[in-house]
Image (cartoon, rainbow, N blue to C red; front, side):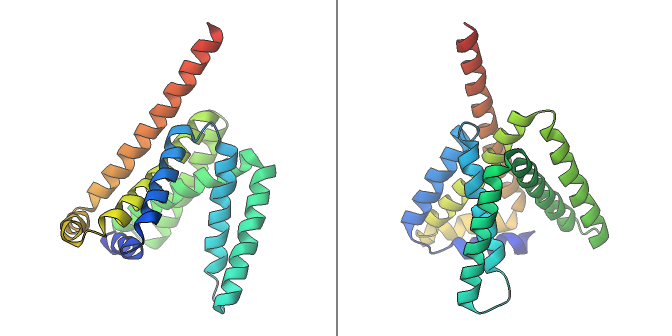
Length: 205
């Protein structure tokens, strides 16, 4: 886990502060009104996933970019027409990734990691049929929290003296990162749930 966290921090360090502000702003939108505009955010999420997967293919840089653009457009279009399936795949993918990340950090065998990831994916997909809105709220709160934390890392990394201390704390206690992620996700989730409840009360009243 520390190695993965260190890699993430390294990718974000030294970026332009404007990028950090953009990430924080986008993250707050995901966390506060994600469920209200989830169809748009779902398309954006799949476009980003597609671009990342396509650009990761072993090829020349130009072909990587073209593959990323093509995959991003393809997944974005699919997400537009298959909304519920898109939510299920995205939520399942995130939960599977988190579960496998935790399992791998505990040092279990790779076969067990795959089993845990598969079970997490199926659990997330099954929840779609029971608590659809709640899954959407939790999903985009999670993504928004990632964006906000990433934006903060970008901004703080431009202040080397302060950042070196914070970076050391994060790498020495990776559970702090997990706590920040959980706290942000829970906060965004309940913010969206409360907004929905107010809307229903106002409608019924």
